[in-house]
Amino acid sequence: MATLETEPSNGSHQTKPEKSERERKIEEWLPITSNRNGKWWYSAFHNVTAMVGAGVLGLPYAVSQLGWGPGVTILVLSWVITLFTLWQMVEMHEIVPGKRFDRYHELGQYAFGEKLGLYIVVPQQLVVEIGVNIVYMVTGGTSLQKFHNTVCSSCKDIKLTFFIMIFASVHFVLSHLPDFNSITGVSLAAAVMSLSYSTIAWAASIDKGVQENVQYGYKASSTAGTVFNFFNALGTVAFAYAGHNVVLEIQATIPSTPEKPSKVPMWRGVVVAYIVVAICYFPVALIGFWMFGNEVDSDILISLEKPAWLIAAANLFVVVHVIGSYQIYAIPVFDMIETVMVKKLNFEPTRMLRFVVRNVYVAFTMFIAITFPFFDGLLGFFGGFAFAPTTYFLPCIMWLAIYKPRRFSLSWIINWICIVLGLCLMILSPIGGLRTIIIQAKTYKFYS
Image (cartoon, rainbow, N blue to C red; front, side):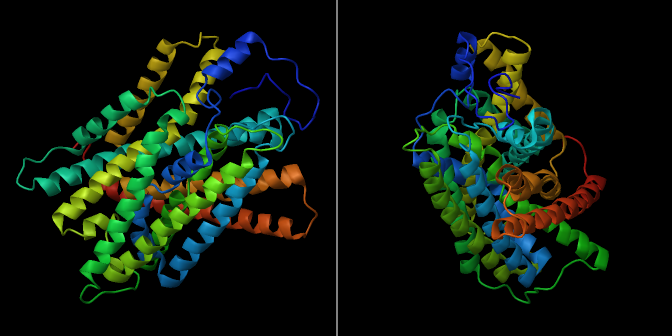
């Protein structure tokens, strides 16, 4: 929804006309393009914060629904495929000399054409980013509630609704930080926390040891239940690898010159981030399932009731982490809304506009989270429906459209394999997620 006027996206390399004073002012005001002095370690923090969400705590449960063989295979395959597609996006950021694709949809417009690129990318990107923000509102509230119940087990029960509101109150303040670089401190804290609670999850599981009569078979009593759970677990895994939606926006904050293109520091940050992702994901998923078998809860911390102080700390770490993650996913949404407001609707780029837009958005995500807090079902549904395309195969389709590799060359084959696997994920996992939501909705009371 941005920079539609500045340059044709059809791949033509003609020199673009000088930007008008107003356009330059808008670019300096918009959150994605206002600050370009990011360092490679900013990229590492932001990518870890974007990628390692609270979804990691659901991975042992996902592996229990997939089974040992398929579970390990899908985890490793997802790590490899998403690292490959992330590399493609970093490479394509400056594919046209002298032009930077600062937003996912701008690259989409270059690959598919002005209109079609917008229609393909923007709805998916918005579903992912708003979906993540809603899920993180639920996660933040749930973790706060668990912290409260663990620390003060004799206290009066407080509704989840109120905990979600408490979590949202932080964002009514933090959302007014102008751009990515201004949230680097929040992002660093979040990245450290994700490493901390992941380590607590697997270390406490080892400490607890393999449970008596542990079972590693499928838990569902019927074949249909097993199949639907398998589909839902695919979505949970897809949700765990969702950082691609903000990768071009993060790269936009890094300075770039022909001698020192932004892809070099960006890629260094991505590699560091992916090592951290592996350190967080694989031990939690595999050790959690090994210790608890198919009795593991949809959030591994629930299975680990003791020691109480450690579980309370882990839940608090999750809250801090999710605060950072929420901001990482919200900034591109703010950028899109603010772009439409100032470029299409001709509002003046003022602080007041930003204040209203961001508060309304935080209030909206809070309201939806309070109304539909079906956490694991939401993960599976959003995971397949929107994360699979933007993470697993949309970068591959853009790569094929832009670079046009020779048919049956290695690049062509690898991209098509990713596209086929991503499509399977996109079709199958929402089915399982939707079934989980329907089952939970039967017993759910609104605003309880």
